Amino acid sequence: MSSSLYDWFWSDRFWLPENVSWADLEHPPPGVEYPRLRHILYAFPLAVGVFLLRQLFERLVAKPCAHILQIQAGVPRRAQSNAVLERLYQSKACPDSRQLDGLSKQLDWDVRKIQRWFRVRRNQDRPSTQKKFCESMWRFTFYLAIFIYAIRYLWVSPWMWDTRQCWYNYPFQPQTPGQYNHYVAELAFYWSLMFSQFTDIKRKDFLIMLVHHLATIVLITFSYANNMLRAGTMVMCLHDASDIFLEAAKLANYAKYQRLCDGLFVVFSISFFITRLVFFPFWIVSSVLFESWEIVGPYQAWWLFNGLLLVLQTLHIIWFYLISRIAVKAIFKGKVSKDDRSDIESSSDEEVHSSSSKNPGQSLKPKDGSRTANLNGDTHEH
Picture 1: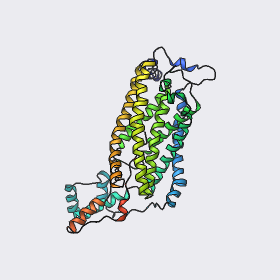
Picture 2: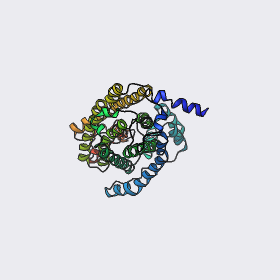
Picture 3: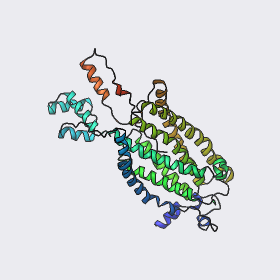
Picture 4: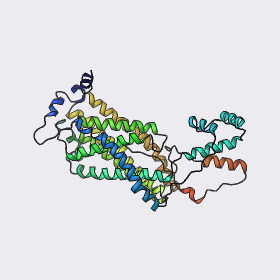
């Protein structure tokens, strides 16, 4: 049963062009290696290693850097112990007015006191600046390292400058060590992100990122299996290029180098636009859509790959809309404002409202430290 299901899933007619079978790829010429699915399975144990390496990196490298930059973990103020409020908090962190009135009668507390308890309790779960700094430093290090590795071998690859060579003699194209290492490293990294996404800082685009990671993993795995390595490595390299500047901007923000943060974020916005809204659709996607159709011809998996690439392009457009809003504020207001994708709550709105209620005639002036941006978003990713 399992064997027949496996044969059905990996059908030659679905995954490979016409008149090509998996058996044809099992016996390459002497000195030539074709991709085989079992080779990419090494990414699973490697993903666990990447996850553990991240823990060591954050503890031994990122945290000491945070201390040098005087980024402290901070101990949040703890809410008063109350079993009734804690039980409701676990199911609903922001109770509505009806629940607040009911709690006020049950506990004989003022409504404002209950609101303050929930605000303090929510702040307990907020990640510290140091935690966000360590997370961004890990991503920055990986994106920079893998981009440098990829661009070194892609620069001398003829298909980078002539994308039609991605499809000549396809799928009988030899695999290079650089392509294999690049694929395994990227796949292990994205599997590690799937593990850590449920423990990392939660953001409003959690579901979008989940779809993005799944689409990326599927693209990497299946493009490796049917030897779309030439186009695949260029896709991954393009995505890593702009993420380097995003993570660098976030590091500058957490270290309170505001001007550097603003400049890096503008550079990130420009690089994101060039790589993901210009190069990606008009260089990579057009090659997979049109050049492969002309040289190889469409087959069933061809529609799958192009569909996934278009899903990624749709996500790029959504993200660029959010990014451009922040970049415009950085250019015209002189600072990067709060990332619309961040799901981290600030108590400032409630405090301003409370202060205004107590002293309606008093003007509220921001402190000097309020210029520090809340650049808490994430793109990864890819």
